[in-house]
Each structure stands twice: as structure tokens, then as C-alpha cells.
Image (cartoon, rainbow, N blue to C red; front, side, top):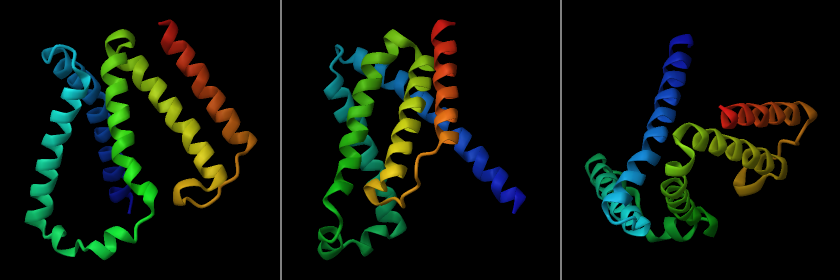
Amino acid sequence: MQATLFVSAALAVLGGMLVAAQGPIYARFSLGLGRDHLLAVFLAFATATLVTGLFAFVSGSLRALTVVTVLSLPWWVWLGGLLGVVHVVISMQTIPMLGATLFLVLVITGSLLGGALYDHFGAIGLAERPFSTTKAFGLAMVIVGVSIVASA
């Protein structure tokens, strides 16, 4: 069990490092396309769609896809892709000004604040987990950390 936990934590750290690479990569992609953020996002997501589609086809995942299954999903699940596009466009436009570290600290802060709200209200299919003074203290400490990073 400990090994599984360690591997999962290591993969999460690796995932975070990959996220940190995405913004600068997208920013350079956009720069190479004349700062056309939308074209860069389109090409990046088209590549991701092709690769993911190929993996889904090879793995057999597409065999389970039916119109009934797709139509039975809540409407808001389709917002995930849209939110990803918005995030990528924001990263392309702000990382050159903020730098990758400050950008990511701010993204993590926003993620934590959003997560606390979604948990509190049981939004987007989550179980309700009420906001607490302990969570408020932890989020305040994150904001202090952002201030330290921003002033460095």
C-alpha cells in the first residue's frame, strides 16, 4: 500500500511538472504563429484530439461509446473542454508577463479557492464538504505564500 501511495504521489508531482511546462510551450507556440493564441490553441487541441482518439481506438474505448450514453450525460460535463481552452489561452497571454512560477502559484491558489467553493456547495456532482475555519486558515496561508512568491 505504501508503494502504491508513493507511486501515485510521484505521478501527481510529475503531472504538476508537465502542467508547468504547458504554459511556456503554448506561449512559444503562439509567438511562432504571430501571437495568434486561438490558432495555437486550435492546433494544440487538434493534436491532443488526434493522439487521444488514436489511443481510444487502439485501446477499444470507442467501442463502448453510444449515442444513448452521450445523451444521458449532464450538459455541464461538456464545459470541461471549454474550460481547458480558456485556461490555455490565459496561460499563453499571462506567462510571458508573470513568469511560469508566479502564474502557477496563482493558478494553484485559484484552484484551491474554486475547489473549496465547489466542495462547500456540492457543485458539479461533488459531495458537500462544508467550508471550515481550518480550510480558511490553510487558504490564507496559500495567499501569504503567493505574496512571498510575487515579491521575490
